[in-house]
Amino acid sequence: MKTSFAVSLQKTRFGAIAFGESFTSIISKLKELGYQGVELAVRNPRDINEEEIKEIVKNHQLVVPAIGTGQAFIEEGLSLSSREKEIRGKTIERLKNHIDFASQWGSLVIIGLIRGNLPPDGEEKEEALKYFEESLLKCSQLAKEKDVRLVIEPLNRYEINFLNTIKEALEFLSSLGDDNIGILADSFHMNIEEANFYQSIIEAGDRLWHFHIADSNRWAPGFGHIDFESIFRALRDINYQGFVSAEILQKPNFPEAAKQTIDYLNKQARL
Image 1: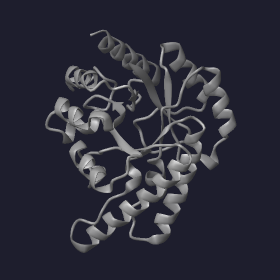
Image 2: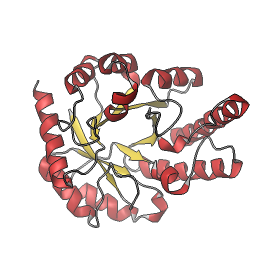
Image 3: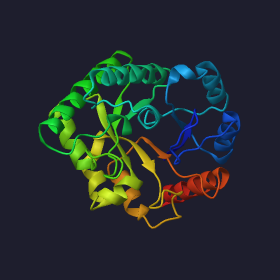
Image 4: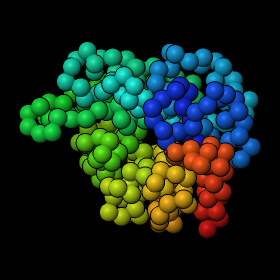
């Protein structure tokens, strides 16, 4: 099992992620604990010192399996489904920056919150969904040019109002017809939306390219009530080869959350 931990490169209101003044100290701790990768969340890659980040990660011999993009939605309201053409254009341009950043690492680019919310119903909803499809395809084309893949993350209904389940994401991707886009499953969101952890992962099959782990309370696995045994059994049954990446609240604190996660994942790997 390949393990990683989600870390933010910029201060954000999103709490389920590690962030600190010293990126080096966070990376050093992850390496010390035995993580193989670090998932990087960044609002705008143009606002960070990319060379410094690359050097720190490289020196600690970690890989970067995925780039998170949701802060652009949280902090700036950028959205691929916006009914405002200017906002959609800015969002595509921002994701182009994320794709460029990801191309240096061979990372996936996550399409989660940045897809935005659709109007509740009617023609406006259909129009916004069409805008999302068009915008996503443009981003996928840009990604293909950089040999980068995208992943859609099904999110729970309280955060985003469409593509909430793995089945919905699979059906959407089937209709879209773009094999450069896969799925990121997240146990926290699955606990709210999926009827059966095992079956949902089995249905995702080889379209599942990345996995976020968090318990029912979004703490580290083992601090809540999710049945992780069925999750890891399903991952083994589909011969999942991607990363299992912790996107969790830093409770009771970052070092303890990171240690609890890696200990739990190592225990599952031995089963």
